[in-house]
Length: 609
Image 1 (cartoon, rainbow, N blue to C red):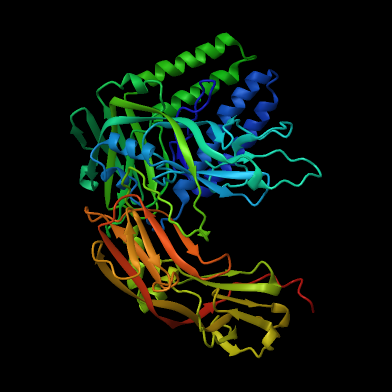
Image 2 (image 1 turned 90 degrees about the horizontal axis):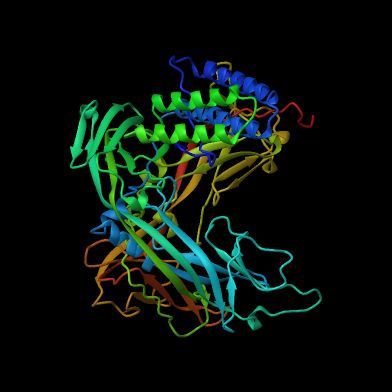
């Protein structure tokens, strides 16, 4: 939930309504609902459609943002850890080096779509960014065409056309998890059987990319003692206005003018991160990016619009000019950032766009095919001219040493009472590297559970005699499901033991030049004999000379046949491994998690009598 000005194409902007008083959340919610009702009523009185749309857009946004502020203020402070969003930049000597890695590490995978008439193309980026971090610098990627094996060039179109009888290249509509995916669509002919393999196949993807790198990035480390102080480095300054339990208010200024290359580009030069007392980064829950002065200005603009009888070009020009003039006067950037957890220290980083480097490149990327399972005997090369590190690996690999008590402490219990005939108790824990190595050979053993009534003091009372079909325990999924129709009395407590599974993992570090039989490095590819190193028991991580973990691009299993055993696996890395870490599951133990759960009450009014 990140709120920032400006937004609207007509030159109108979002703002956040913040009242001067501090009423309770309940009163604020009531007030917000009243404002919404009044605003909707006022809209009905506007006859001019353009004016009505403009007022609806700005006023609706104001109410939406007030709701966002209310949600951020009332959210419980529960600790949730995130990642260092600047970790990737810290691996490269300059911002431009990161840009070059981003562009040169891009390639395209050919993927089967399960249809004879579709072929999916997946652009693979060297970095995975998540909101709100996204890619750190202003950038744009535009696909233009695909070249087929018969030399035909198919232009990109923004959406698939039902009436176009030819081959089409358009964004994929079936893969929401990879929004950058594309689809090559072949024409469907009623009554004619077509084999996709006989269609001309995509061999290269054309496009263009542009990335703007700032002059530098500078970080300020702040604590509560810095509140009210301004810290400066050359042309950059940061003022910590407030540091509360779970949010910080920060103001930033760059005394140097923006580089001409970004003068018209929306920028977010401020990156605020927080750590708690453990030193770990807290995840963000949202931010508000407007000062009281900005809020007041946009409220006045809305009031002016509401006083108009009709929308006119002259009025639109006036609104736009007022906004431009006002924004030019705003020399400081402000943000109020909320975090999931109590803040101990703050890291405020500033991207300095007083100078910028614009990198533009035309792309002509070969389309590669790497099926997860293949019967091919030859190993395809996949060497890219970049080095990319896996910053999540160190934390992920802590799961290799997960102990019994740690596992028990991480368990959370939830209940679902929506369906009285299938009430559920669920035992869950954060997934870790240990879970990845559990394999499939489970022996959960007994999973006893008993249900009890409660006494007049709400304490556990007598056990309830039940038929076996009244409840079911699924130890592999960590669930207990019970049917209240089959209970002679209402249960209040469930007591028992749920099995958890813990792998014993042995770690070894091997020099890349002294690999044992069954492991071989071919450039950036690790070839694993899966008869000696079965995939369900082994995992491999690589480091280069810097000591950082290399990010794995992808892995392929080469099998004897479609149904036959695996022969060898190949792991491709962004960079040249100098050391390997092997992780082998040597044992699998069952840990009994004893529990006493106070049961949530279900609506039993309509149960069969």
